[in-house]
Image (cartoon, rainbow, N blue to C red; front, side, top):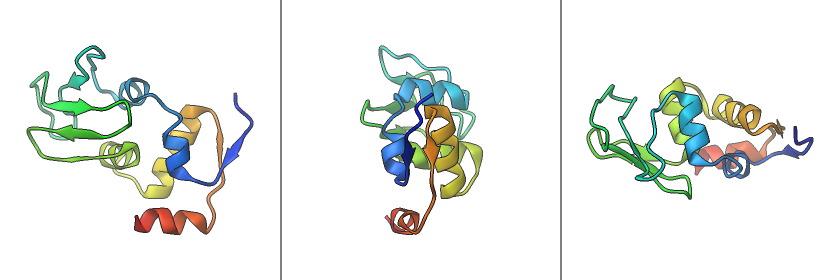
Length: 107
């Protein structure tokens, strides 16, 4: 486990490869095509949900999209702070929420 602590949720999110994050959220991914059925609308289309290695995602059926934090928030129906904590735990780092998170939430 990395003993580093981070104050930026976006920095923590960048530590996780998308396939690992998606798998932890319950997506059945095809890493070769970067496609999956969309859990957000319980879709069965194997190519509706797509993502980039940079961490952006989009469902071509329901129209939702965003970054890793937005994905965690949508799937887990949680706050920004809780999503950052989930990502930190998955990445094996410590998340120190402070005033800096307010600026990130506004973004």
